[in-house]
Image 1 (spheres, rainbow, N blue to C red):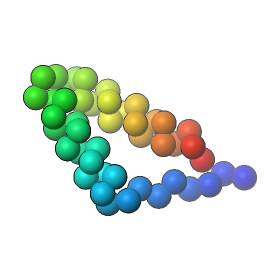
Image 2: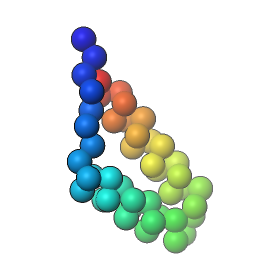
Image 3: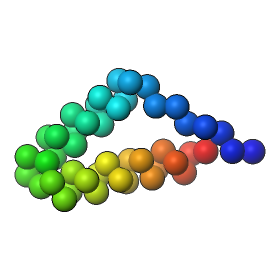
Image 4: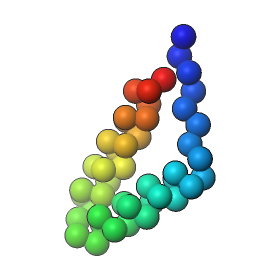
Length: 45
């Protein structure tokens, strides 16, 4: 049975802040980081 992962607002905020920090050096790596985190979260269900 699949379960739904619910993101807390603080988790989204932390992810955005981390991506913004990475993007200062590389927008590409920031986008890849966010994709990997979101993919990992999807695999939890």
